[in-house]
Image (cartoon, rainbow, N blue to C red; front, side, top):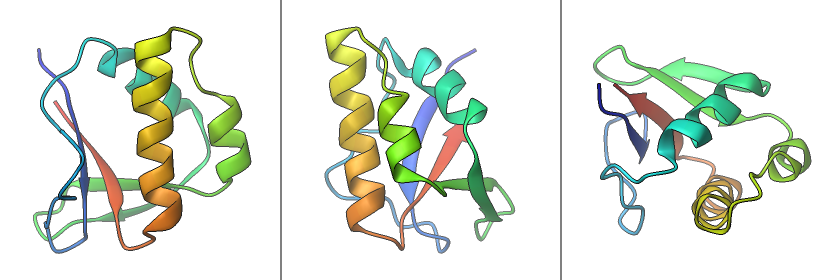
Length: 91
């Protein structure tokens, strides 16, 4: 089963620079994301959306592997700078 990490608004608009196509480390990133405290809402289709409630905690949870760490920190950076975007883990 595939996984896409989508960065979107509640209305379903995807972030223009985030690449939601599957990447190798995305399953590991999803496991980290699901283990951390988050705010939750749903999008226009009823899918669960997540946002960090503690950006410092989320940043310190970054994986050690360079590719995964880079992608993860890019993701957290988008969410921190643009509060109208949320995470959707699409399986």
